[in-house]
Image (cartoon, rainbow over all chains, first blue to last red; front, top):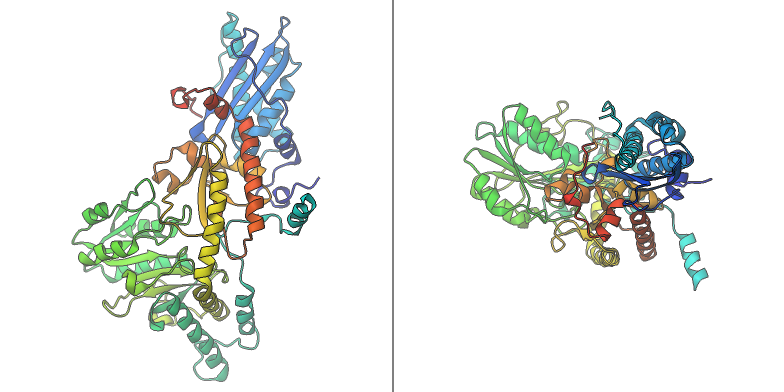
Length: 148
Length: 414
């Protein structure tokens, strides 16, 4: 696959996987955030140049049946959230909680300056799960703040 | 018709270069003028005692005239340097050292190039005082604020001619008049303006002017500093010690091929600037009007006082780097933080009062001598498609469309 100037130069070396997710993002869209089965996580800030919205739909067995995202940000941020939705589908909520940002870094071969994109994706997953938990009368899970 | 269009696209050099404020391709005529000075005319221009030196010196002298002519100066007022960064440094640090008995205050603006800002910071470390003027929303310096900032200690006012990010052209003549009224010198970093719009050191009242070859289709690594010789006679303290070249202001063996190239580039610019500016501003306006048809797109900086070949446009709710990735057939630049190592969006755009998110969403289109109308048409299509694609992906665009005020949301610190 020829990705033009983006992969030819070291400086702006996006991995093929980032380009693939960026060019053909999976699961772009919106779920009904009012539904009790849907958890929504909105993280980042426009001033920082990254905003991710990640949504999960959870069935009665605590399995994530659908996931959607929309992201304002660079190619790596879009790819991280696209990948996250792919991974979330079919997982139990408990397993989804275990997704670590470094897994995303590894899968997408993100360079050090783009690690924050994976952190944001992990935050978005956790925020979506917590939104779902609170909506369904559960305690939100205490999140470690070590990334920030 | 469709096949014709496809053929035209096929004939274009992709990626299309629309980053002519960063650097310009060298004009083949410039290269041709330079070539002999790499080989047979290789002499050291400072070798006064033989043929080889004389030939090189002749080339340099001719280039000095070509450069001087373009800015209405005399050839004795041109100091060759390695580029505009060196010229800015020499002017600011050199004036500060030379005139320290007269005063220690320098005035500049927050939208200046880093070469000027960092040279001013250096001066501050040496005990100088520097005022960094804010600019108005359109990027222009407020003349009343400049006037108010002048003190009896002010020795230099340094305001750029045309801005590198937004192309805004400052009221140089008025600024010079204010500086002179208060007994200060006026310096301008005219890197982006010389060769693009008429610049005349006497009509404009410029005492020092920095310029660079590679922004006007000349080679990289060569530039000049204009230093006024009459009314007043301006002097700068050399920042490079050595053989006393360039009237003692800049030592170092002259880069003869580069200087010859700079001279030729100035000559061509002088001949073609008028028609080129007309052609490029028409193409730029075409690009700008086609892209501002898109909802929530904004032109940054004053559009009436602007270089003819630049348009800086923010596409709200999309992020600049993500956008550039979707426009990989175009070589443009963005004020987005992601494109720089600093993780801060463009300080120039922020100083216009743009919110960070608009600064992150900006793209600078810089047209040039070799930009064709087909390329501009193609750039319009690519950009429109990319903006629409990314807005489909943008949660902010969705919220905007739903009428949600983004300022009402408490964004998590990240």
